[in-house]
Length: 217
Ligand SMILES: [Zn+2]
Image (cartoon, rainbow, N blue to C red):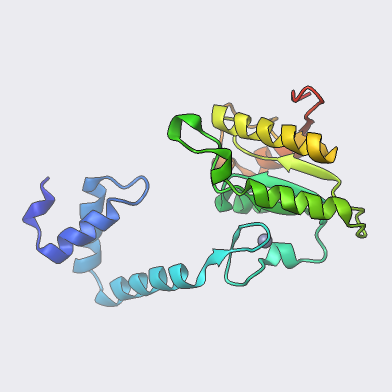
């Protein structure tokens, strides 16, 4: 199919839709047809929803999850344990972990994984902010007595493992804190985002401590 046969505005719509993840040209054309030939009000409300979500949603100043406020609901929740931080790759992983219902600590979103092959360096991730958080918690004597545990919940891919070991190495050297890695129960290469609730809650319960040789034991 050649998108150039379409009028300019529709061509632009097809072009924008095809930039979305998992949307190829054929799907983009099908979606564009659906949007412009269906109920006009539906197309307008979709456009409005996209604009609103894009305008209002930002990153939490503490954990870098998505929020409409400066600090997200999880970071502001006094009933959650400040002393346990679970490190994830992307905001969608928080939704996956929250669905499983078993975790009552706080989160930190890296917004990526360390990947030399794709040119992503540790400096490109929200790591400096994570270590600042750990430092602040290590000094504070809150009701939970500072940071008790750092749980690294990156996916069980080569990049996820490399990122986990990088964080574990640095966190243990600088702060002598307990670092653990969730992996148990997740299939090799498995991403949290796509795992079911039971698998995720088993993965959290079965997390392993990263030892002084930076191996998961
Ligand atoms: Zn937050």
